[in-house]
Structure formats: structure tokens, C-alpha cells
Length: 219
Image (cartoon, rainbow, N blue to C red; front, side):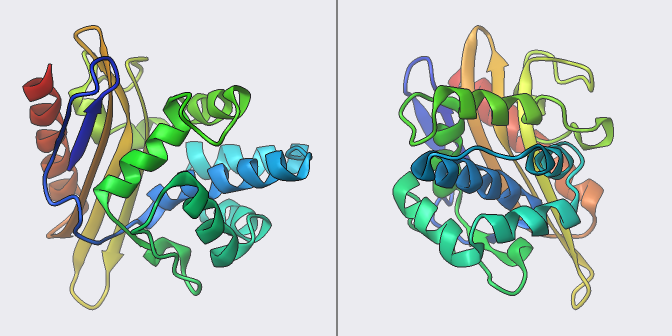
């Protein structure tokens, strides 16, 4: 777990250097890389790419993510962008991007690219990603949102992307949530990663408990 109060700069964290499988939270990294590459090359996303980005972030569509992963340059392209973003502990899995490993410290750095001006992304690109994270489909509006003033499904106090991945070998789940929440007039970046959950629901419960307690502790 890692949390940063953008209003004060105060941070709190636990096990920030431990590696966890990203599952679908990698999709924020994929989109950030596509936008960063376009910025460097003086190009912009096509309408078809924007449709893919909407499906990838709002619906967590894996086919859309695969297409944009290729557009981003695959593992080499995302690794290069992550170096520019300051991420040092994210290892992109070339055979299955959802099996990428990361740390909560790297995820906070990625969130800073999306939510702060201390970013390699333009203001327009940051707003674009934020807009997609504000409109994830209803059944995916769980996780770090628990730390927001209003964590309801239709609330506007949070923006997030979640990931979940069952492991057939163990019947256990990887469940993760990253995003920005508003609480008591402050904005917080929050990343909670978990592994070896007995079910998706139990992973969600753990993440929401941790996210709420972490934000409450700082706020």
C-alpha cells in the first residue's frame, strides 16, 4: 500500500518494494506510454485508438489493451517510457502484459504522471486519462474508492483503475486498485496491491479496508 496527500505532500506506505502482478492496472501504463510516444513524435491518437482506449480503461477490455500494447511498442516501448516516468521496479512481461510485476512505489510514480504537473505528459493528456478513469463501468467501481468522501458507484470523488487475475495453479486471486480520491478537501493518490486472495471478493474487501484506513490516517 502507498498513499500520497497531494495537498500536503505527506505520504504513508507499507511493503512498497514488494513485487506484485499488475493484472489490468497495467492498462494505465499502456495508455500513458501511447500518449507519451505520440507527444515525442509530434503525432496524436487516431479515433480508432481513442475508441480502444475507452474500452481498455472504462471496460477493462483485454483485446483493446492488446492492440494499444502493440501500438505502444510492446514491452520495450513501455519499459522506455517507464524509465522516463521514473519507474524502476516495473518489469513488463512480454508474453502476457497482465503478468507484469510492479511495486506500490512505482504505481504512485505512475499516478503522479497522470494527476500532477510534475509529469512527462501534457495537461491535455493527463485530463484525457483522468476522464476515462472517472467513467469505469459500474461493476468495476470498487477498490481505492473506499477512501473517498463518497465511495458510491455514481460518485465523482474518485478516479481509478482496477485489476484482478485468477491463478489456475493455485485457485487464488491477484487483486489491485490504483487511483485518486478526494477526502476532507484533500486529494490523495492511492495504490493498493494484493496477492493470494481466496476469491476476488475477499481481495476487494482487503483493498477497500486498507485504502480507507490509509486515507483516514493521513486525513
